[in-house]
Amino acid sequence: VGRNSVREALKALEVIGLVSSKPGKGTVVSSDSFDPFLLSVVFGLVLEDIEIKHLNELRLVIELGACRIAIKNAKVSELNKLMKIARKLDKQQIDVIKNEDKEAIIGLATLEKEFHKYLIELSHNPILLKFNKFWDIYFSRVQASGELYRASEINVEKKITHTAIVEAIKERNEQKAVKAMKYHLVYYWLQSKDDISKDFLIKLISNSGD
Image 1: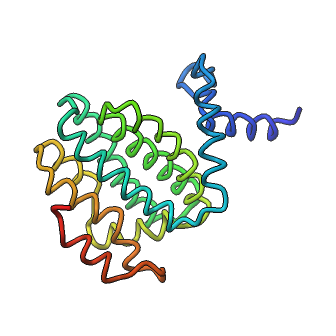
Image 2 (image 1 turned 90 degrees about the vertical axis):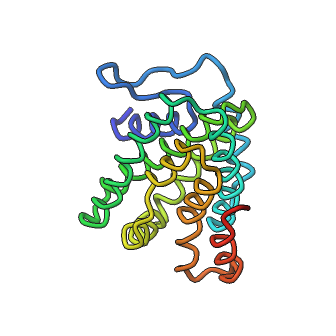
């Protein structure tokens, strides 16, 4: 089998969650369970042919809820770890705008996925944890579409950061955390030619208590 074929197969298995890459060890089997495979199949079928704007709407529902629950359930040590990821991610967004190369965008997608998956973990909700498989599929989709680069341009220009979300959660300030997450998820849509109502999105951002 050619090396490229093996490389692509391992990438596919990693997306599914059956293997993972570990520094110094290489690629290892990540689970004894078939859950990662089954969840990937289920999410893959459900999300097939679904437009990115609809995936973004689903993100809004999931992550606003996760923010609220993380405020109640996350430990200080876990939030410190999330902050480290957020700082790396915000720096990577700036690097993507400066360099505009493929490797930078791949790195951004990896960090985005790591941040949002870990935020879900901090909810300590077993049902929400099942949705973490959604991020593997979502960020693979947006990485290929160019959405991440365009969203990064707006985030850097408007100084919308992931660290602001984590700071609000660390303060256990639900209103502030929800507003920061709304800016992160919604502001790009305001700049895009989408059929989502602009008035609705502006109201959604300004109404930080919902």
